Image 1 (cartoon, rainbow, N blue to C red):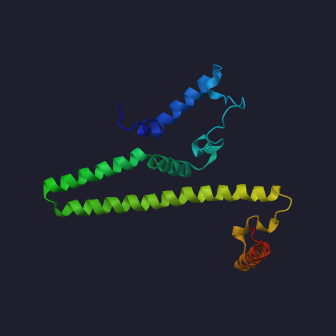
Image 2 (cartoon, rainbow, N blue to C red):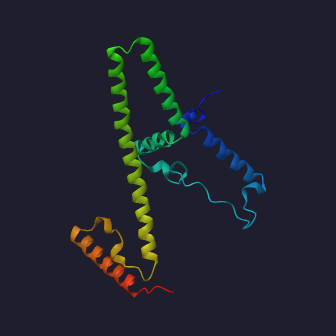
Image 3 (tube, helix red, strand yellow):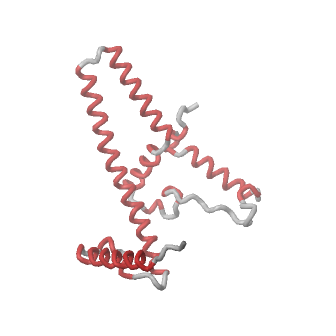
Length: 181
């Protein structure tokens, strides 16, 4: 038995098994996968590894997201804490030799540096996707200000003007709102 099953088979053994179970129950006509109130199937997972076209991303992006998915599990944090305790006890047993601290510092600095890039990449990608969704909502609303679409790429002067305009609108809304007794 593998102590941390999510680490087996490329990192997503449990997710694959659950997805396989869902597919087989749907094929068999099981009512467990159908919402009883609406009679519709629940929405599919939107995790990056389940999104159609996810294989079209560059291999490095898929790899970094895989590392981010694995390290996001609670059991990974517990594993890191356990390894740290083992390292501490080994230092106690060995009398904290000079190399012991050097190895610890080097390993933690390397892992920290790698995780900074993993977090930066995954958050930047998710933020870009969220921004595109918000832009689509702005395009869909007839009364929305289309100048706000892709405003994150606007020059600083335009951002300042929009901020001033929005501040004016907020002040007008506060001024026009009268408290009800």
